[in-house]
Image (cartoon, rainbow, N blue to C red; front, side, top):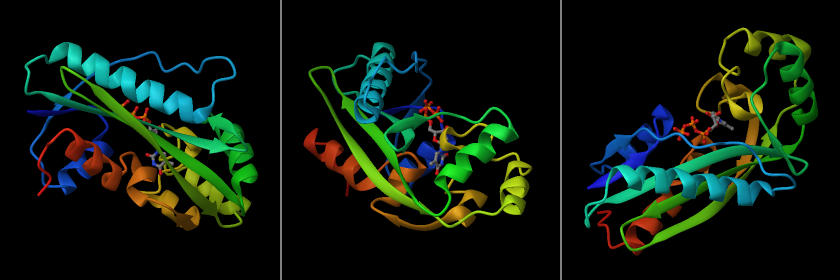
Length: 189
Ligand SMILES: Cc1cn([C@H]2C[C@H](O)[C@@H](COP(=O)(O)OP(=O)(O)OP(=O)(O)O)O2)c(=O)[nH]c1=O
C-alpha cells in the first residue's frame, strides 16, 4: 500500500491526479530551520523526516511512504508565513516584478530504503500595486501560506510566468514523484 505522509489537501489532489490508490497519514515534525541551513537541505531534510515519521506508523514489508516539503526562497532566504498585512506587503514588494524560487523536497521510503530529491521552480511575479496586495490579503488566502501566496488560488494573479514544474509549486512535483515511485518498482501506469 502507498501512503502519503501529508494532510495537505493540495498534495492529496496532486497525487490523485496520477490515478494512484493511496492512504493519508498525519505526521508532525519539527519544521524549524537550522542555523545557516540551505533551503535545498532544509526541504529535503523535512521531507525525509516526514517520510520517516510516516513509516513509524506503517511497517509492513510492502508499504511505501511518500512525503514532501515546500518552501519559497527569495535571494537565498527561506520565506515563512506572513503574520500580518505589513509583513505580507513588505514581502510582496520584494517579490514584485522579479523571480523567486519554490523548492520542494520529496522523499519515498519502504522498509529497506529511503530516496529523496529536491525540485526547484523559478516563479516570476508581475509588478504589484498597493491595491492588489491589499485586496489579496483580504481574501484570507495568503495568511497560512509560506511565501504568502498560493499559485493554485487567486495568487495565480501575481504569477506572470514560471520556469519549471507547476505541480512542484503547488507542493508535489509529479514527474519526479512518478520517477521515485518507479525506482521502488511501484507501477505508475
Ligand atoms: C508557493 C506556494 C506555497 N504554498 C504554501 C502553502 C504551505 O504553507 C506551503 C507548503 O507547506 P508544507 O509544510 O510543505 O506543507 P503543509 O504544512 O501544507 O502540509 P504537510 O506538512 O502535512 O505535508 O506551501 C501553496 O500552497 N501554494 C503555492 O503556490
